[in-house]
Length: 289
Length: 243
Image (cartoon, rainbow over all chains, first blue to last red):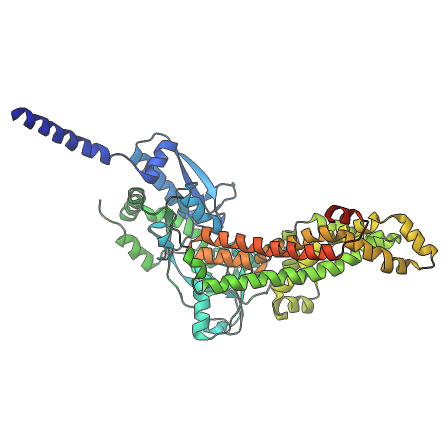
């Protein structure tokens, strides 16, 4: 009897010891990064100051800096000395397939977190908040959405901007004549050459476009915010271990206030101070250890 | 892709299904309207390339070399963004603001003029493939040179180019996707749009692939009928596809 007891006790002990050891084993993205020794970061090429190709030809920006902090977090979590970062430029159509097939592990750009998209991907903590506003030439007489009645308005194909302004147009019966541009440079070109009266895009993008233009004093951003667009880093679904590593890094930045320096470094380039709303969101996401 | 959550029902979900259907209609409209220009202009260019007048040859030669050697995407940009700035202010303003569906017409003209230079080369090849003796025989029977073109060279040359025209007709449907860059909401842009809204890119692009394949198969089939009707007994082409 005593002998059996020993065997059972031994087996239990073995299970008890093996349990935590098994929990240490990584799965999903962390396992992939550990085995491959590389992490893939997907970035935009033309979304300053969040994610863009700089004058030195390297991808950089606010979201990119946050992603590099997360890369450091991954390195610490996996106890790796060296972790190679592979940069992959993404466009709207390649973003999701390349994330899902493992070419990239994080999408670091200007992606709005919404519930429809969460059917397919997962998002880390909110890193920026913006919304739709109207970019127009000074003296156009456009002050808010209602003034767009019968005007020619550009908006980029497939963006959440497009979805929202078209719904507003139908609801308020404005009869806006839309021109669905392909990307920001073309939306800007249409406005600049007088092909359109206004360009509808995220407020922060509008400020970015103005700051890059030849005559910034000729343009203005008008009207109320007519959407809520929280930007987040995109990761694969059903991978809470990896998401935790990312969110932990972000929570640390929010809690310590280190986020402010990173924010100022990039967002001051387009004269965009941190809004009260964003401050509160950062505080709310500064989860304790 | 083990984490991809499939949802084929997205293809028949409102309002997306209507967007895609309208995309198909615009693709067909752009391609067909472009084809009308391409065929008309291409025929003129093809004939002009065979003429003896050096001035005419130089002009159409320059046209063909320019339009054939510049990427279509660049041409579309030039037509859309640069041309209105070069014209007198009033005309440029009209193009930019008052012309209804400006992006559609720009796409049609770009596709038409680009495809026309390719068709022109094929028509020229068709005409040049006809034995010189036929021209001489026509002239000897008292026909003028324009009459030789009208009754002999053009009808025969055209019928020899039908197989090559089939390829161009298919190409214009595929090239029409570039119209999305200036804001024509054709099939590819609609597909991208719905993919962005729903993140179901794989289903949507699969559907778009199938639709493009169907359109081009229909074109191929229709052109086969034309080929059969236009066949010339005793010519190379009829020997190849003949009974």
